[in-house]
Amino acid sequence: MAQLAEKQSVTTLRPREAALKYGISAAEDVELLQIILRTGTVNQSLPQLAQSLLTTYDNLAFLSLASIESLTQFSGIGLTKAIELQAAFELGQRALAQRQLRQGVVASSSMIGYHMLQKLRGCTQEKLIVVYLDTKNQIIQERTIFIGGLNSSIAHPREIYRQAVLLSAARLIIVHNHPSGQIAPSKNDIQFSKRLIDCGEIMGITCLDHLIIGADEYLSLKEEGVI
Image (cartoon, rainbow, N blue to C red; front, side):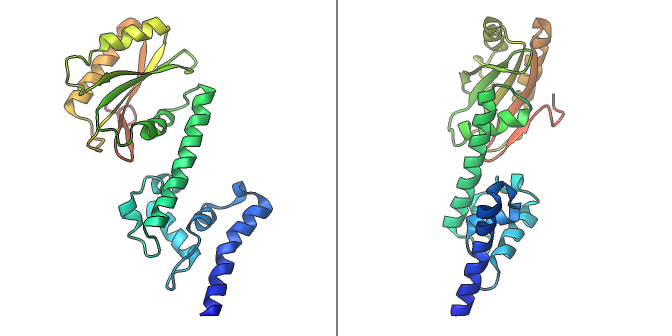
């Protein structure tokens, strides 16, 4: 039993020692997971447990979206480890979003998507947020326009583009959440998006994308070819 504990201790410390010597950025994905997980089980070593997570989810991006329920299906991962994993990913995503938004330039829809996941996750009301951009895709303003369903009569492109004109915005990205957690676009979502694009073309203001935010993921209508 003492030998087993010693073996597990050495295995656990190796990635930490490497990180101290070479820096945390030099660590492989599987080594970073070992540092967070700390221990394996009697039947599965720590490196094997970390590798099984990466193999199951393909990469860190998909693993970061895993739910507590799915993570605890792995032998050796209880509620505490599952929450610690989610906390680590959450910190990384928040830091990245804050760094990019501080720079003020939107490089892709995914940048806004991850930012809005943090902002709207768990929100029980449907919100419509518009990110207004200039000609260089620099953020001018992020503004909540409506609270309520997109089938409501108040969800009208007029207010969205009125604000765009006031801000001298050249482009915009529409974001709204589904409190149900599902990201599949409704008929109203698609119709509203196309209506916004048509209005923008008339006014010379480009609607770059419409993002739908769910419980743990988002959908880009542009990337899906819906608009």
